[in-house]
Image (cartoon, rainbow over all chains, first blue to last red; front, side):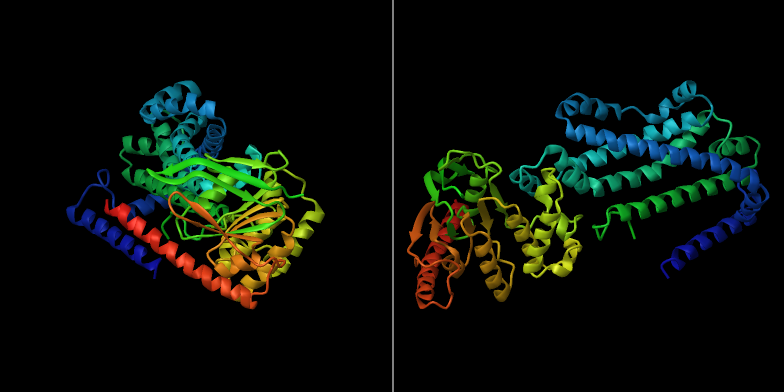
Length: 250
Length: 254
């Protein structure tokens, strides 16, 4: 029933869409119906799969690098107070810069290929991951730290055995946000300048009035985003195994 | 040898209320001191002052060496780390100090946990344990530290009567010849385990020492002398409790 309800809603919306297109006799180069989109999805499956693969690779690489760099930054910031004083204000102010505005520069620096899109995804997820994890590292239960103090713990061991595990739920929320924005980074990168990927395909199809193909690419992009979010959520539940209820829905 | 220590608090105030003023308290080396008193009188604060978690106290040991590395504290909350198993929680101090995980140590931890009735839970996560079991794990963690000075804040409060009795015996055996300060709400527990029993009351805090039998601990709770002392203590505690109550009503009414 839990799966059935949203599926029914989706089917209903698709039916309304198809009926609307037919009744209003909209030309397919303005708004194709879902049947036409499905047709394009099947007919151009090879093409779509090739471009989807590239976008997926960009997203995954961006996710991986962004998470690694973000996690490492948060740990360094939490472990070294001088670093915190010098870097944290700059880091926060840097977020006033719209990352999308950097996309043309990234293409200029990293070229038309995958690198500029990966860089874009990294930039867009770096801050949510760093901020969430750093916040978690700063909010360790004080009583645990006092216990460690009475035990004459070494600082790096406290970090590794108490502060980092205690901050993992916070990191998990950061990574969930990352999973939902990483595809945006990759696609924006492709829009600004590229020769492959779903974002490129959408622009290309749009310019040629192949709106059904554009919708098919959009559908695949949404599917990729969902699959990524689901996979990350599953992995995080395993990582934070001691937490019965996590922040995610479900 | 477990040292005697003296704690002096010149003055300590919270939110304009003077908790301690010209306060002096001595813990006898190798003996158990039990501390009673109404909630909020400052028992936990005194423990934190001695442990160095709260600034404002001068702690002097008889042998002149500092307390660092010689003190274990069992707080009121069990403070188990939810991502570590029972065994790893018990070994936490050793892991935090980066000491080698020696077989002897692990065996001792397992033996201690078995004595506490937790042999089936060695690899369980704290979330799967009851409150009483968690408290026993915290006790094991405290005992395994092997520190000569041990401060315990209501260590047996979450246990049923039978288990409490058994664990009092066990703790008394493990911490024989240790300098122990035990905070408790139970007059009988204090009389059972304390070489000395003190009642904390008033603002600023005053300590009053209660006469206890000279017999070794743990004492037999069925001893008529102990039961008579318990009744007297209960009366005294009820009085200071009512006074705390009045005081807090008066201060909140201001």
